[in-house]
Image (cartoon, rainbow, N blue to C red):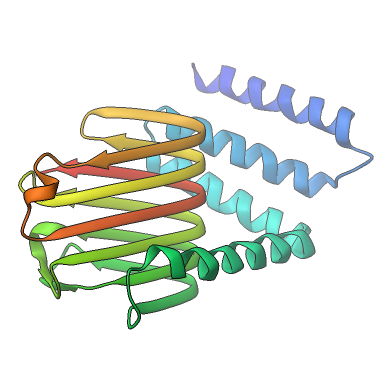
Length: 215
């Protein structure tokens, strides 16, 4: 679709939303929804950088114009994080990290792989398991938030299990790319049961971009 057609499509959606919902939601909320829709379209088209930028700007406008609603959703997400985290993690003594915004760059140098639960409103996690130094034979990493960009590099001979749920966004496994709403992804590496070291990722985001690469 050309840029001109994209513009008219988004404009038509905006006018329709304004006509249907103008008495219930504000103009700025409609603008935020349009930016989110356009950003989602860009993600679907493979333009991840622009897609994330549009979604980020739309999210900020939406948050500022619907603060009480957003705070409510955030509190629910945080409550689910603590409730589910206790079930997901196999034992006490795991690391818990929660922030409004966070960035974990576990793909630049060797890093300690340990049981960890991470929650953020907006976050990015880049993990290369070929650089990981396991602290134990079995590890669980639990990632949850409102918006997330997750990139995992998985060696083919590594024992890895992934359970992911993304309400709205995109997921890519090797060369297989999928997007849309209510995305579920389950993966277990061949030979997982016989692997000396095992790691399980449990991932849950309202809006997210998940990319899993086999190395």
